Amino acid sequence: MLTHLPILQVIVPLMAAPLCLLLTRSRLVWLFTLIVSGSAFLISILLLQQVMATGTIIYELGGWNAPWGIEYRIDQLNALLLLIISGVSTVVLLAAHTSIQEEIPADRHTLFYVLYLLSLAGMLGIVATADAFNVFVFLEISSLSAYALIALGKDRRALWASYQYLIMGTIGATFILIGIGLMYQMTGTLNMYDLSQRLPEVENTRTVFTAFCFVIVGLCLKLALFPLHLWLPNAYAYAPSIVTAFFAATATKVAIYLLIRFTFSVFGLSFSFTALPLQLLFLVLGLSGIFVASTAAIYQTNIKHLFAYSSIAQVGYMIVGISVSTVTGLMATLLHMFNHALMKSALFLALGAVMYRIGSVKLNEFNGLGRQMPYTMAAIVIGGLSLIGVPLTVGFVSKWYLLIALIEKGWWPVAVLILLGSLLAVVYVWRLVEAAYFKPPIAGRETIKEAPLSFLIPIWILVSANIYFGIDTRLSIQVAQAASQSLFGVNP
Amino acid sequence: MLMGLYNYWVVVVLMMIGFYIVIAHGNLIKKIVGLSIFQTSVFIFYISMAKVDGGTAPILVEGIKQYSNPLPHVLILTAIVVGIATTAVGLALAVRLKEAYGSIEEEEIQKKDNLDC
Image 1: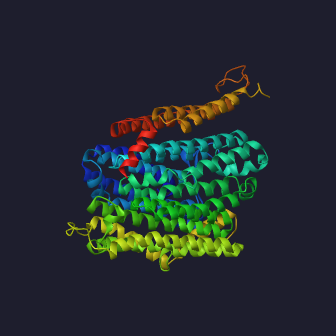
Image 2: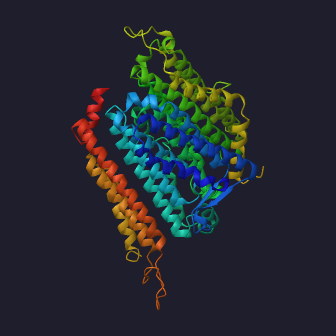
Image 3: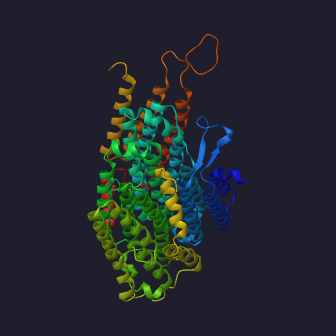
């Protein structure tokens, strides 16, 4: 059983998805989905333990040897991502049953869970597999279910957002497919490890260079790197709250994982950073992403829009971490992936609670909510502080390591810009705090009560994780450091 | 050079036609059609790269020495399925958009959204 964990990680949610259709009662399906996602979480914990103890796990599907058969390869980086995805998915699901009562028509509840599980299986598959074409297939499984999930939103703008995401997402995925095809043409293999061995022989050809460009551009579309981020704000703002909380924490992270995997492992560090001026490109785009998206966030009146723009800015920080291209820089990126997942899922889930009680997340609707929904708003404040990077929250830890990496490299001006970018986060979080705590409640809405426990429990699990991993950083730093070192080929 | 690689020229031309339609057209159905053409060009790319001149299907038969590479052909079967699924989801969304906005023109939908804000 233990030796089959890598495949179980993916196959359990994938097989469970159609089974949901047999259970028609909404509560029953929810429980089933929760159990499935919980067992995926359990598997990812076991995998992480195993990887940290014994090193990379290689699993050959059907016993066919790589590179002929498909191989799943779990190293520290994969294990960390699997943990983030399945963990966030499970906690967010705790609130799903209550949340979708208000936001999704009753006859679509079962379908919602089917799509949710498919999307989860797709993301876990992208991370677990070591086969380049398999990545494309799983990418499309998770994306197609994501389009449908976003279109379930109550507002009609959800449909338009979903359509735009479909167009952009498909272009991105097709670019990746072209890149994989060109790589196969030059090397005759699809296995990532095998590719990394064979690509250096042919790396001076234009075909490999073209493949690299297609893969990078396709992935940057998927991870919403400025200026390819246009699909993201509306998709996050109009999707059902649960979907936003899940995707904001995981979808872009999976794309960043692929970017790291392709640049560092498949094409190799020396090729990736010399074929294109990738360092400069990522630095400039990452920084402009931070400033443009944070500034845009300040002017939003829909709070889901606000935090969606902030997500784009946070992706900017991760990309800057990659551009440093040192062990510490990459480690900061990995830490920020982990930490950002915790912050954004807590924030969007809390917004889901507000949506449940008030039916809107417009800024002026937050007036006086600090007293009416104290626990929910306190969660948003802590999440916001974490987003800014205040000490004792997770946000501080990753920004701290990013600054260390930049200073080690001698990039002082960039370090200053990163700090300035954090100040912009102070502005947009403050607008929300001001409305919630310093303005009187809206007339005729004195009876608004605190969100139900089914919301408060998952929200506060995530908020406590925000604080816990901000103080006790052993787990996250140990894993991120090991993953980063192994990507750079440094022996710990 | 030009004739020897003519299958790749077909791929590039189709790819650009599809990509142009996706970007330039405001009609939602036309965008989906453009997307399909774009994806189809990639299918042709995979199929033609695996074809060996004079090669046949990889079945062991007496007297045949050359075989085409079957792997990309099989991969593209999967990609075709993915492409169809994408088209289906896209068209379904277009139907829902028509119901919700009464139009399938990008400009009009955008205009109605701006009125809402």
